[in-house]
Length: 186
Image (tube, rainbow, N blue to C red):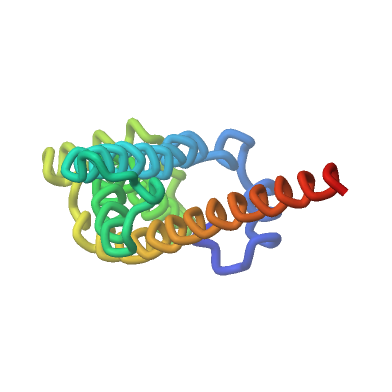
C-alpha cells in the first residue's frame, strides 16, 4: 500500500481483493520489528544523558545542581548520537523492508509472471547473495542524514519542554502550599 499509486483506501481494497490474506500482510513482521528503532533511540538517549549528567555533577562537587536537564546543545548532540545508534542497529531491517517493497513494485509491472514470495528471509537471502554483508548497510548514510537532524531537534525541544514543565510544576506546588498555609492561618 505504501508504494501504491492509488491511495490508501483504494490500495487497501485492491490488496485485499486481489491477494490472499497472507499476501495482504506481507511486510507486517518487518514493520513490527522496526518499531524497536524509537525504543533503542530513547534508551540510548536516556543512558547517554544519565552518564553526562553524572559526569557534570562529579565535576561540580559541593554545588547543588539546578535540575536534571541538559543544555540545548547537549540534548541536540545526544539526540543525534542516539538516533545514529538506533538507525545503525535497525538498518538491516529497513534495507530488507525496502527490498520487499521493491520486489512488490517489480511484481506489479510483470503481470504475466507469477508473484514472487516477498518475505524477510527472501530479502535477507537476496541481499546476502548479491551484495554480501555490506549490502545490509547500503544507503545507511542517506538514512542517517534523513533522520538524524529531525531527531536531534526533537530531543532538544523535548528536553527544554521537560525542564520548563518541571519548573512550572514546582512553582505551582509552592504557590498551592503557600495558599493552603494562608487559608489555615486565616
